[in-house]
Length: 176
Image 1: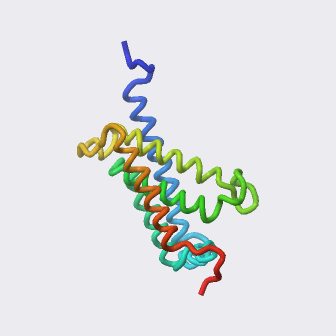
Image 2 (image 1 turned 180 degrees about the vertical axis):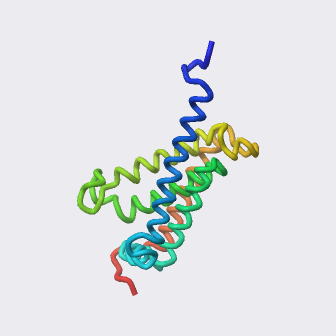
Image 3 (image 1 turned 30 degrees about the vertical axis):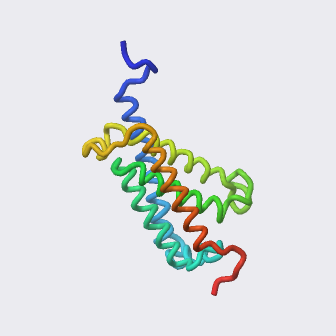
């Protein structure tokens, strides 16, 4: 008879693995670029300072490490709601500090918020649906069920980002 929605389990597992791998690789590259691309960590720190995230070096390092770790965890399918929540948190901070006032399109001056919105929604979707059977979460029987994966993803992402912004974000001040 097959699956009621017409998609086999293997097709769903493949789709989830491809989604996790592409998003994981993308965010690893993003974190790597913050540390070693262009102006390196010092350039990223200066940019974070200019956004009002102080101290800029600490936030540049934290964001880069979170991106690298979350990306690796997504690639492996390990602790996926937490990894997706970490990705969501980074995107929410970027959305609020760097992109929200620049319009929708990423190609707009100052870069709009379309990219961070899409990555945020994908992070919540991955965290909610879970990693699939082709993952370390499944191999180690770490998968959550029901609404818990989404709750963990959203609490980690929004809680972490809003807490960080409340404590450290001071827009409109010059770096000292």
